[in-house]
Image 1 (cartoon, rainbow, N blue to C red):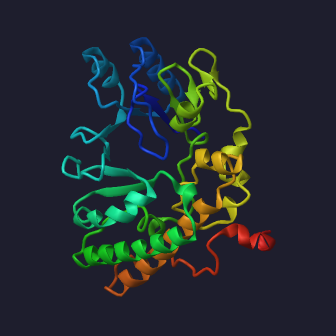
Image 2 (spheres, one colour):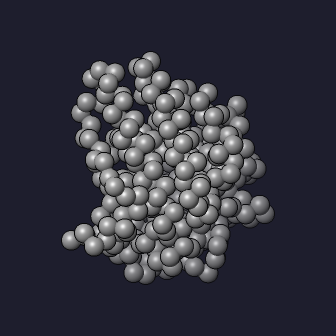
Length: 309
């Protein structure tokens, strides 16, 4: 069931996920903005406004503030989700979730910068933008980095703090899949007045819409965006995996089937979370109510397809 509407206020609105936004500016008309808000109200959807770096005309802010919403911005004190640029945390609002978009190469080089922010930030989400380029050597390096970050998170827990780093702590807290939900729990309204499964689909192909403000939504084969119609994911317990619909389609041509690379990364994170939970419990009664994370003998659930029922 739909719960959220992402509204891209401009073609240059900041990216908060795997996709790349456009650099050229094209502002959503104020009439279209009002219509988008009206649609969200009629459908009882929470709005997430995705802002560009450049200021909006003054009249836009009064329209935006006419409804409850979340702000997604880059390095802004009034954001509800703060996207940082080039791993520069100096301007980040530590009181809201921080999003770090990075390539694997830069992540491998700069991951130690997280050590100085983990204890201060409310939450950190790391988004690796070129997931499908990982190879076996990259997987090994990624595992080593997760182990190093796990040790840092453990040290923060010793100080009786509860840091949140999506790569490590999310799986400890989850009892079921908690994925991005594009096409199922959330959709996107673009500056052209059309709906898209997520911003990535808009930036990749503007003709790939799922309706518009005049005619309404038309999500074709909408059951495919649901977990129960995902042949691999419904058998998986890497609950923290983003299960990115856009990456799925790019890699496998199916929105409900992830790539091998996505699965392996998710299971490396899952296994590091298992170790983290085990070690935190040695500190006393911390997280004693959380369910154990079972040990697995695979990194890609597709390898166990013969055991599915």
